[in-house]
Amino acid sequence: MTSPSRVGIGFDIHRLVEGRRLMLAGIEVPHPLGELAHSDGDVVLHALADAMLGAAGLGDIGEQFPDSDPAWKDADSAALLGRVVALVARAGWAVTSVDVNVLIERPKLAPHKAAMRERLAGLLALAPDAVGLKARTMEGLGPIGDGTAVASHVVVMLCHV
Ligand SMILES: [Zn+2]
Image 1 (cartoon, rainbow, N blue to C red):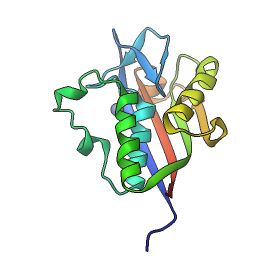
Image 2 (cartoon, rainbow, N blue to C red):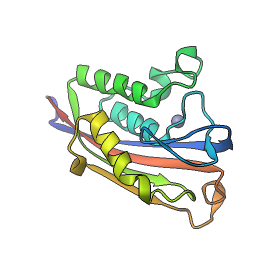
Image 3 (cartoon, rainbow, N blue to C red):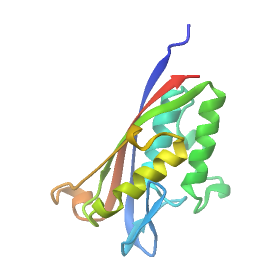
Image 4 (cartoon, rainbow, N blue to C red):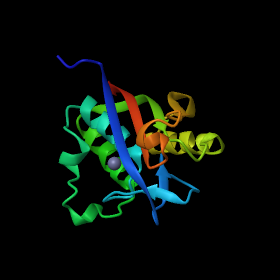
């Protein structure tokens, strides 16, 4: 018997370096540093993709989109997430809600949060009130606190369709 709903959790972290764009939830946030990654390095979309794949029993982002595949070099993670939405839909699941933590010391994300939520809602075909988004610092602790990394935790709920 198929259960009517599933929960998934995802986490991602990338180093922040000069000469890269800071992509968060499909939005470019103005900042001198951006994520170092094979793709565009959007930690929110990567954690979200992992949470969705995990909930649907489809493995993880590394299995579905290997770093060794040149197709994903500097890839738009929104396109990658679209592939994940399609994979999850083919398996019979749809996202009903998502809750996101972004761990970043700077810049402050308050001016960008509405746009990030709206973008996530658009990518997942959800109402904005089904998308939670919180940003917090690490109080100066560790590599995130030093401003040399950014991370994200995402929890998703899937329902069987
Ligand atoms: Zn990533």
